[in-house]
Image 1: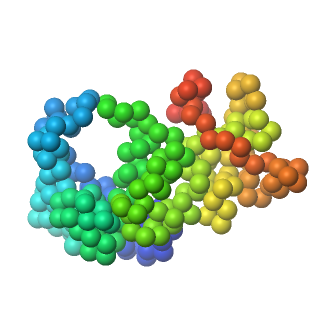
Image 2: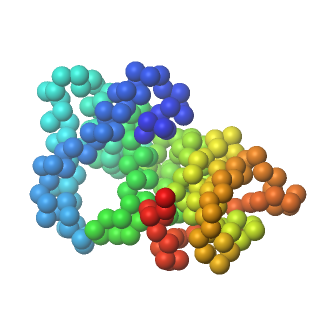
Length: 232
């Protein structure tokens, strides 16, 4: 949320408050029963109604605390509201949704998609962005998801990609001016054997058609038996 907020041009004081909203956005889950919070299967309608209360519970927990400004509290309360009005708890529509929760909604959904949960396996960063684009007209304020891609790239940090020379690399930094050509660290040979890491800034490298490199594909590390978390 902070990286995205900075990309959107928020000033330092706004970023400080956004940090609190992002940090506490799910604090209400402390009051959701663990058997619902950690249920490995699909929630029943009753259980989902209990889960949906977490944003209100978080708001109520934080409201009496000193220093909790209105934009922090709104970010916590509204982070599950949707642009089309089908979110919760207030079914807010379009511009009724406050600026902090617009940011946190995108960051929260991206984090949920790219994380392992007891009820699902993580998506790759690239597939997560693709999925979010399929929901952009319902869930997100117009143009904001595109700004997110400007900030984090078509291939967000943490993506495993195959380059046109058939080596494989991990994306380490996006280039907002060149979303499809991030900074990558080449970590594997074309046979997926580990190799000495090499940092390559694709935005400063000629495309493959001119003798340089392009990203050819985004890969699922789990299907290849690669654990990116264990890379030093």
